[in-house]
Structure formats: C-alpha cells, structure tokens
Amino acid sequence: MTQPAAARTDVRPGSRNRAAPAATGESSLADILERVLDKGIVIAGDIQINLLDIELLTIKLRLLVASVDKAKEMGIDWWENDSSLSSKADGLAEENRLLRQRVEALESGSD
Amino acid sequence: MVVTEQATYLYAVTGTQEIPGLPDVRGISAAPLRMVGADPYAVVSTVSLNEFGEDALRQNLENRQWLEETATAHHEVVEAVNAAGPTAPVRLCTVYRDDERGEEMLREQKSSFQATLARLAGRREWGVQVFSPARPTENQPASASDSPGRAYLEQLRSQRDERASRDHAMAARAEDVHNSMAEIATAARRYPPQDRRLTGIPDPMILNAAYLVDISAEPVLSQNIAHFQRAGLDVRLTGPWAPYSFVELETS
Image (tube, rainbow over all chains, first blue to last red; front, side, top):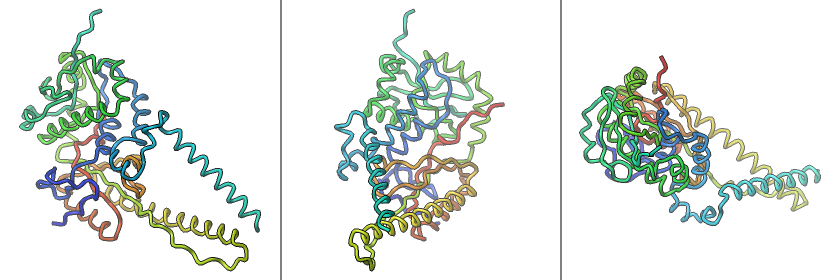
C-alpha cells in the first residue's frame, strides 16, 4: 500500500503511525490550536467566555504562536518587543502599498 | 453567594464507557480524569476556579504559555477518548460548576449527541495543507530601453506578472487537491491558510482543509495524496484527528 510522503516539518518518530494507511507524523502546535480553539462542539458551560474574545485571540495566534523557535531561527522575533503585535505588520503592508503606488505612477509617467 | 473553589472541565463526549487509554492520561494541571453521565458520557476533570473562573480565564487565554499547555492537555485527553470510539471533542474551556451540571447538559442534549456520534462512527478526520513554493524569479535580460530606470521598472512589472500567473496556477492546483479530497470524504471543511510565522515554513500555505473520511476509504485518500506529491506538489497530510471539524450538534 502506498504511504504518502510525510510532511517535512511534522515528522517525529513514534507517534500515530501504527496501522493507519495514510498516517503521517505528529501534528504541529499550530494545527492543534487551530482545532481546539476554533472547532469542537460549542455547548453552553456555566462559565461563559465571550466567543468573540476567542476569535480575536485566534487572530493574534495566527500571527505569533507555534514554531517560535523555528521563527527565531529565521530571524522573526519582532513580537517580543512589540506590544501591539499586528500593528507593525500592518504598517509594513501600508508602506508596501504606498511604494507600489509610486512605482506604478513612475511607470505610467515614463511612457 | 459563596463561590465554589472548584469546577468541572469537560473535554469530550463519547458513547462508550470503556476507554482503555484513559488511566494513562492526565488532564489539565495533571488532574486525574473521570467519566460522568450515561450514554453519552463525558470525560471531565476537576479544575480550580482560580484558574478557570471567568476573569481568570480571560487573562489566562491571553497568556501564551498557559494557552499552549491547556490546549495540549485538552488535545491529549481528546485523543485518548477518540482512540476508543466515536468522540465529539468539545471546545476548549467548557466548564461547569460541578459534575451534576455537566450531567444535566448531557441529558438535555442526549439525542443530539447520539445523532452526532452515530454520524462519526467508522470515520476519521484528516488535515490537508498545500504550500506554494516561493521560487525566486530569475533575472530577466535587460530590455532594449535606453533608460536604466525604465528597464528596471519593466523588469519589476514582468516579475510581478509572472508571480501573479504562477500564484494563479498554484491556486488552481490547490483547488484540484481540495475537490478530489472532497469527493473521497463524506464531509469537508476549509480553514484559512495559516500564517507563515505560525507554520515556520517560508513557503505560503495556499490550502488548509479538513476532511471526514470513511476508514474504508483511507487507502484511496493515501493514493490521492501520493498522486499529487508525485506531480511535485507540496501537499502535507496531518492526522488522523479526532473529528474536531465535524461536530456541530445535530438539531432535531
């Protein structure tokens, strides 16, 4: 039986490979958080937490959690000094947009 | 009113009382696990309201380390329960005042849970992610233009066009993967692609989806994934998962 090649980053020995025909390695923390925070049955408990809070939290997580060590290896560590987390990324996107506009203006102007 | 110090944290709902792996697993804060209710059963542990009271919870959810530990403990319990039979994982941080309140909820939702669990029997959740290789664009030969500035801008434009058409082609291949998987699966669900900072993988994720697949169809799933991988696509399979993505309660 063909086994699909295991994912690059989540191959760790000894996990759930037993008899599963299509098994790969262990799941990443990002995949786990995505499921336990976003999915699963929502039933009313006695302690109510606002789901909107959870959603906001998830957005933050998308920006920073998971393979922190890996990210650091890649030189990504801006969140450590940035309390507003996403504001810097937004700033960069805005800066890129403005630069692109200028390039386009220059391109059309030079014709 | 006197607030009780402890509460009941609910991990998962299942139709079986026999969970061989359960004694080997601990819950949140290494608490022992127990079962409450009667078909369906819930797996629960005792947690402190100092940690899981409303205000404390709000703060703790913003604490990355607490969240990672709690999520991991939650997930490990769900896995152990799921290994024993059809299981409905419950959203993180579902907390009741005591076991009786949890049992009351199980009684009230009994038929919904039973319908959901019946639908999950003999099926497992698989995750599929597709990444788009971020190949560097080759330098174009300089154009015939006299102006170096203009030549540069033209090069930028052609790189941009090339990138756009490659992105378009990759998106179409990701759709092929999704459509073929959805045909094999009994249910499919797409997630937003994970951010690169989250995956730790430089290539952007262009498909992030979950599929509920009959165990008997898993060899076909295997072949399908292998087919795309042989064609050079960066497709990754995760799982089997407890059916997190497929457990909305059936409303009767």
